[in-house]
Length: 81
Image 1: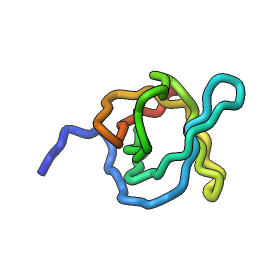
Image 2: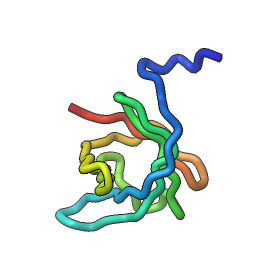
Image 3: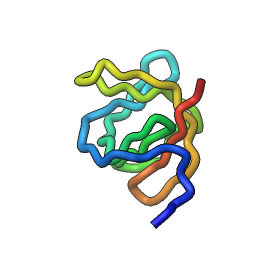
């Protein structure tokens, strides 16, 4: 099934942090990851800004993101830059 994605995504289960506003952070779970973006599980998407930095400390990963879709407890992001 072709979903029109530009990059192949890989299913993962990693702890991450959505960081914004000079240090504010929200815990999340990274559910899939590609070179272009990720899907993140969150307790609630309320209060999560359109742009933020995703940090996965275990992988020394940090990327600026832009939200491209929101569902009840999951958000999809595209990596910027």
